[in-house]
Amino acid sequence: MTIAVTTPTGNVGSHVVRMLCQAGVRPRLLLRNPERLDADVRDQVELAVGDLRDAGYVAESTRGADAVYWVHPDDWSLPDPDAEAERTGEGLAAAMRQNRIARVVFQSSIGAELRHGAGFVDGLARIEQRLDAARDETGTALLHLRCGYFMTNLLHDLDGLRAGRLTTIRPLDEPMPWVDPRDIATVATVRLIAEDWTGRQVQAVHGPADLTWTEVAAMLSTATGVSIEAQRITDDEERAALRDAGMGEVAVEGIVGMGVGTRDGFTPEQPRSALTTTPSSLAGWAMTHLRPAL
Image (cartoon, rainbow, N blue to C red; front, side, top):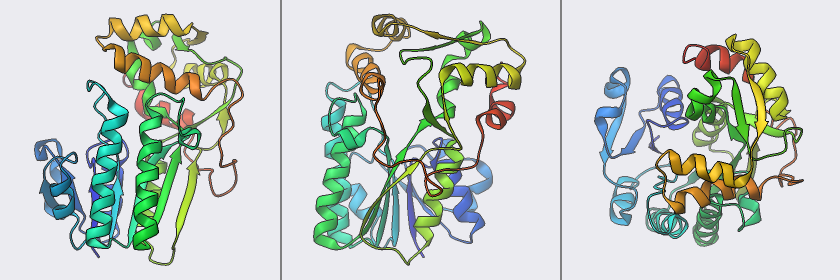
């Protein structure tokens, strides 16, 4: 069985690679920089070096693949990241048509069901649409994973957490799904290996519980030993913080838009259920990954 994995050094892809290797699969890794790959898996994988934005490379590197795990290669420095997402999605769609790939698992996001109005998530929605169109022609088994808020996003504001602040533009008492990327990888790996599913499917990955930001701050305080308080900031304050971090206006608006589009009563299309709930707790993740960083 040949399974192609994109972004194999990312938050989710790195786990997918290890899980496939543990299952006895030698995955084909689509990546730009092999030097970033962990040394202990290099002799267990096949490398296909190139750029996912190159449709010819995508077609060639997925030739003969039974399944593909696709993560869009974000580049928020571009003038129109959503249009770029649509273009890369069409590259995979063309490869589906050309190579008749049996299974495709796409890492999407909660909010993609809105199709527009959710910042950079809108680009993922465009990819879903391109893959859906290709699936209608090819019969590929296609799964869109609508993922919750990554626990690893907390690592982007270590200075704030060290100072005891967990900031958000969302209402502090509004619950939302928090998910460990490793759990996403587990769901993805099972589907990549399994050959007994068909059609177009959408599955949310919601983590173990919907948590308010106040609850998250309390959990992080207990797990790290640092007293952390959740604080709501305005959209403009978030914009200013992102600009201070060196981000351009396109990136600023795309990031703020993700929060704005999925707050104030937004309900994911896929409800929480036994299927969408995954086990890894925020407290356990914070003990392992956040406490050492703080």
